[in-house]
Length: 98
Image (cartoon, rainbow, N blue to C red; front, side, top):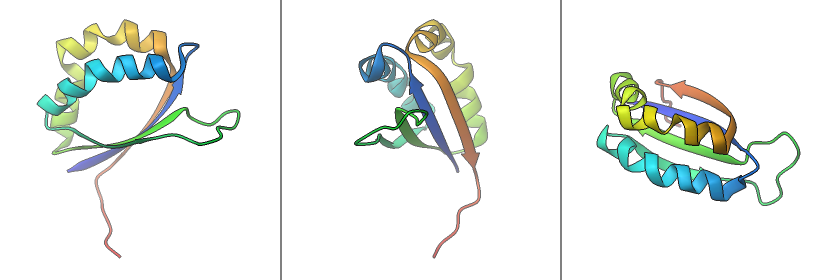
């Protein structure tokens, strides 16, 4: 399993634009075995902070790559570029228990 932390920076369309994009890609993500564990934001966002933070899990790196290469996701890139100005993605595959 891999876990992805994605920091999303919204365009002028703000959170509403992010929601519109998410409503289209999350069903595709699920078809590839992905799970949106959480989507969170700051109560009082400071300048330079991400608008939304996602924690996503996929069963494997191959499943994540298949999702990214899905023709439907590729077709949504223009919408993504319109509503998200910047994305930081961190992929982890080593998990620790405490």
